[in-house]
Amino acid sequence: MQEISLVSFSGVFALRDGVSEKEFLPRLHAFFQHFIDMGFATGYRVMRREALDGFGKTLPAFTYRGELVYTDLEREHAAYEYVKQHGEQVNSLHVAMNSLVKPDADFFLETRIA
Image (tube, rainbow, N blue to C red):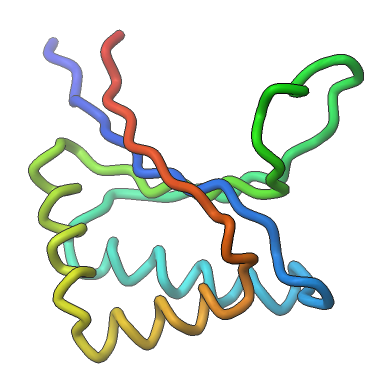
């Protein structure tokens, strides 16, 4: 049986001062769900970083990691191009989410190899 290739686009970030998870999560969920509804992504997850004593010292400062899952690089690239077009719906969801995040967020793309 052949395994489905998985690609993940992740962002690590912290919320702006005074912004709560309760306020932020519905906006993040709406943004991620839009990519699923549009047929780009197959799923997502949102993780809160938990401190490990003595570990993580070389990592950048972040509190959360959001991850969109794609079946392949072609779908991820298509989703990225879609965002770059600044269409009204995706742009409004993006702005609503990003307005609550500190500006030092960072992003990375991973391809499953095993």
